Image (tube, rainbow, N blue to C red; front, side):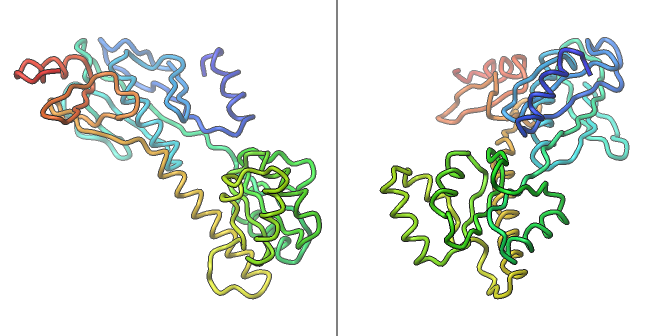
Length: 287
């Protein structure tokens, strides 16, 4: 990794944010990339470092965001000519006028999901065991960081108000409460009277868990974990970039942050590079 990327990678990891490391593993001239060149792509699409010219950057960012979304690495080849992809390779069009071929390995770096538990009931203990078995880092309330965590409040009435106020200030990814609907309605009204925003309380799952007819502590814990998994998967799908097809070369282009676009008959077209946009406009379509 390029030395200047190390502090950024460490900072993103400490904050529990996703990112992807991009490494050039092979190139053919006249590509400007060199074997060993590296870049880092954040979940929002910020690009740091170097892994080839600007005409490859959009493709690299798109593939990096896909890798972060599904957690799977990518081995991509960018070439101006159609090639037969090798096993595990994604063959894509190189749009640089200078030509050349570059092969890049994209590795997503994902934070370990965290499960923060308040309470010591049999259901909470069962959820701790399930979470550990699924690779979650299980932490107990008190001093745990809540930002981005999946939090379950299982205090069963003891300190519910104090704990929920603390949890909702911590920006967790998920908040569940083990309580009946009637009990939580009372808690909600008290928290609103204490100044907690209604919008924050709308994010709370209470009673926590999917409705699977759970009765035992273990079944309830399973329903809670199922709800957490469902929410995580839904959030992951929202991070996959929306895409369009370049009408000139047929390349897939990420809509968010696309640098080249044009309007035609009330529709927006997106392009992989300025050259494709120019060819499109030369056909008599107004920008």
